Length: 413
Image 1 (tube, rainbow, N blue to C red):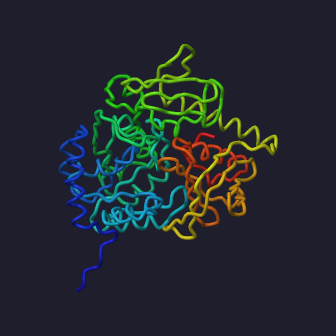
Image 2: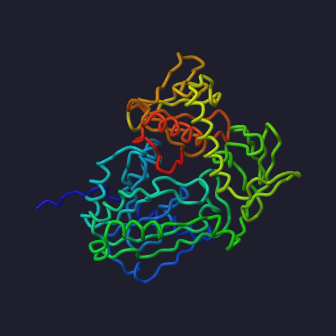
Image 3: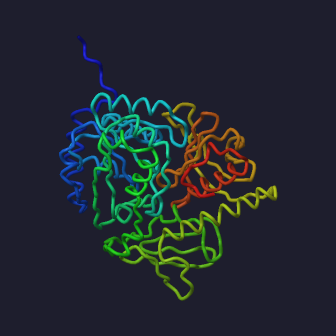
């Protein structure tokens, strides 16, 4: 009888290459594990649910596990040919980001049933400030459906080593702290509320709180490089996207508000004056509320003024889920009732909020948009342009329009 082909098979050469490379990578970058015997001796299949901080999360957590794990990743990562090759060879399961995707549930079930592990980051996206995002309660239904043990790896120090907004890694210390959260029997016996409450507690990690106690040195000369991807509002003059970063410092071009990031990742003023926040977490929470309040007020007043604009952006476009082609340079503007792409050599495009499906910041200055099932990639015209501000502002508008199904669960608008 012919054996049924595996779902999302991981190629042996990729498994071997990945194990060798990331074992060396972890040793070289001082990434260590704390793994109790109950996890070390656990046999596949089981579900791996971890906190999500940086690009390296699935590779590091997967390398230390005794059984190979196939992780779920955003389909946006597959649009780059090189990434698509490696992710496919590693058996990665694609998922449509911020969209209902029943296929990924069927795929996860199929992989588990064939005896393989699956890794998921329930926060859905990498966080910006080292403080976890809310967890969708629907993950509990998946846990109950799969009826397998649940392993939780918590990355501690990863936001110091590889924050989402940074281009490069920093030399510091990272600990991957594993625990067996549920046995298969506990998954059967516990109520959905008990499972959810325990999962939320197990996944909670705040890097600022952790670092205030641990005070782990960050050996880097670029601790501030591209922090403007995450911090886009100046607390002194309220300008948007006005920061320029160099080395361990960043400064507002409008009012001169300046910050030095010290060797432990905390903020200090370079010149005399008020220090509004000494850490990225508190600043991030403040600016999210500030921008949401500002946009909400403009929507309520039916303002026709432009909210903000990214000049000289590069626009890529695709009618499929894979290949993106360069379309042209443009100024991209946000209004309370539309998003406008003013091309330099093509007619302008107007995207309305009813047909806008998703809007997500990616690595560097990239903004991914789905509009009428077509994909756009917008890359800012200069290093450090924040794509995050678009997600916060558009989510605020969607909420005012009552389009609740489109909202990112981690945006507090």
